[in-house]
Length: 297
Ligand SMILES: [Zn+2]
Image (cartoon, rainbow, N blue to C red; front, side, top):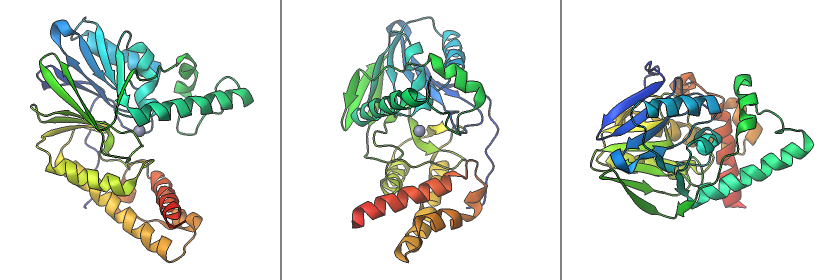
């Protein structure tokens, strides 16, 4: 794949048609994720993801309020990560819907936070990827858990639209949801799509590759990724190629007995090294080693 720089886009709303809106955040880096919503007229708003720092969610809500003053009805969490769920409490009155594993992951993350807080108040030690400006803001966050969970798929009906949530097994996390507007040929992929930046794998990269194959078979035209600009099947194919390169290279090292530390240092994904967040290459190698070690144990 010849390297393509991330096309410039602005933070804000993009109208996709039939009352469906994407809310993008430049530059799609660590903690800077996308969201969306459906304006269901009298039925109110259905929101997709809630962003991370309260100031981000407030800006997103301001955007929604420029379209509609109707109440929030439902909030879909595409997965458990803080940059998609921290804002849950600010989407007031909405029922929260997520995959059952995302709810479990959120409970586990809370326990970790409580554990960390005991040692080092008020919220444990700041992880490196969280910017200083967000850190104080995060004291406000008390992200409520999903009220409704599902296993394989769930269809929501809102404002005359059908919205299908689909879980295709572990990939970015163990509880990823695809949010599919079949009739409009629009997909909100959550972090099953990172466009023009290095994807981070916490679930199962090999299954994620299969999901990429499935996505390019779907009858969709627009994909709102978890991070980066709106794209389509070409961007999904680039991501699939990245996985292929890092997976095969890591497998060779694993099979020839290279240690995980050495593999993390020496991984070289060629043109894909230029993608932002390239530190995730080593994290992805570590993920693959963990998976294969567990399988061969
Ligand atoms: Zn994520």
